[in-house]
Length: 429
Image (cartoon, rainbow, N blue to C red):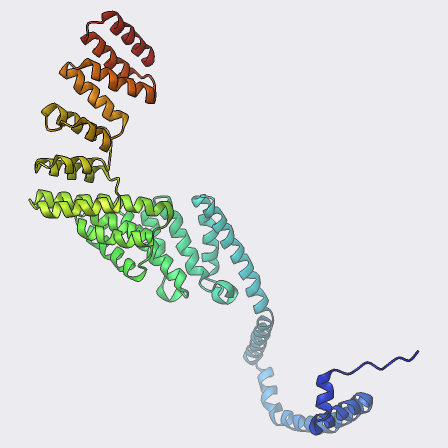
């Protein structure tokens, strides 16, 4: 059985065919085989070179020997020499160990920073402050960008985190004091710059000592830098609304709605409808019915179930004599206020077609309104028929039983009315 020699890699076989690389490989092989003799030759060459160098050094020492002797004979000279030597020695040692010391300090600083972040995430704002203060104290002795290259602006970030903790605790002045200690050149990353600007604007908004114009300017400046920051947009909108600038507040809120997601988007739509309603109400007070209707239309488009906008739009259409338009507007936001309006329409005689009313408002509350209307008119049979439908839908309840008892009492059935009154009392107990 014969063993074939292993094939050399294709790269080596190709390089062997190139003349230059082939010669280099042969030279490397010769050096590897004669390594001992090569070291011996190098040692002899060093000896031949070192002797002339030592002779030159001896001549230099002879030239400077009188000056050195005079230096050591003088106590001041000895003091200066030994101190310079000690300083050079310390400098050499520091150059050797400084990198390791910086990394050790960096690990301690990073651990303190991460401990503070952990406490912040768990809501322990007061306990997190001392951890971040340790980072700030080490900034006086070590260049933190060199000690923690993974987070070069950890010193600025730690002071921002301290300000955040004071902000969460409601200590506005302390938060502002820490924010003002952060210099622009300390913030090396865009993330830290944005955090600083956002917290500064929100702290200004929380302060009671600053003027409204100052706060608005700070919020506007921060919003221009970070146009998709939801917290800044919300604070800016609230400030504008509190200042009575409803139109500007609405425009800012539209930008907030554009970046909102999930449940926040649903709430933002309701808030936009509220702001549109305020704009419409402002136009109504100014006597502009057309602008009012446009504003209410925008509010209902933003949130179709906005109760105030639907009620006001329906009331305006009712004042114009458009009963069907009023019912259509009210049908967008059914509630107790709508049923009260329906009862007044029935009582005034402005609404006659009860089938249309049930088509637009197919609710138990509508049946109760109709039952009360029929009872007042003395049509007790139709009132009881409406109440029977209510009982089939939602079961017995004290208001329904009282109204049913009033119908029986109106028909002269005193015993039946008394029994129902008793059942209503049982429902209440």
